[in-house]
View 1: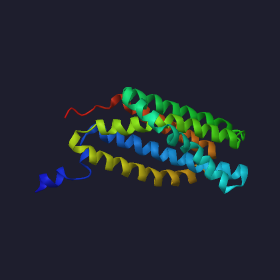
View 2 (view 1 turned 90 degrees about the vertical axis):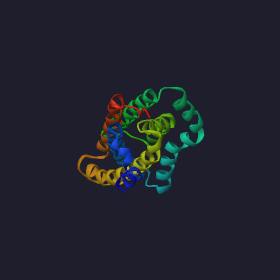
View 3 (view 1 turned 120 degrees about the vertical axis):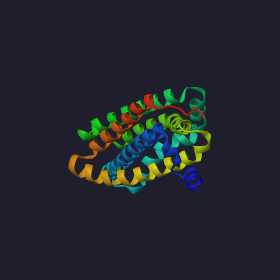
View 4 (view 1 turned 90 degrees about the horizontal axis):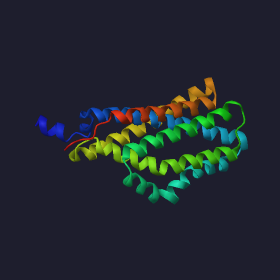
Length: 201
């Protein structure tokens, strides 16, 4: 009975070392992403005083995925997933750091924020599928459903932690610090990728 229970556990993917490492990295990245999202919403609201513009700025980041999602998925399939994910994480980190600099000196405009959001969205069209598929590669086929469940939990926990940390970080260090934190979270994921080992069965 204990064997059956263990094999059917939704957490069984975490038996694999690479999956545990990847889950920790994704939780960190998710928290960083939500920190930046809170900061971005606050910045747009401060710059424009418009809730509608706040929603539009988020839509600008989501639009590339809607328009070019198929292209991004093709890139993730055609090229090595580690390479696509690694380059994607580096690109997203650079965008976050590039946004943090003008934010720290009160030089941000709504147009620049939206442009950076669109650029992040373009990178994510390939990076997102590559990271998702890479996570599935870390466990045997029988544990893929568990890996997907664990990834969803990490994303939701990261959302809760990230929004809480955003409030604390922005209050004590400013909005630019949230962007820096997100950039560091992307670098953390990129640093983990070379140490991941795919499952052999």
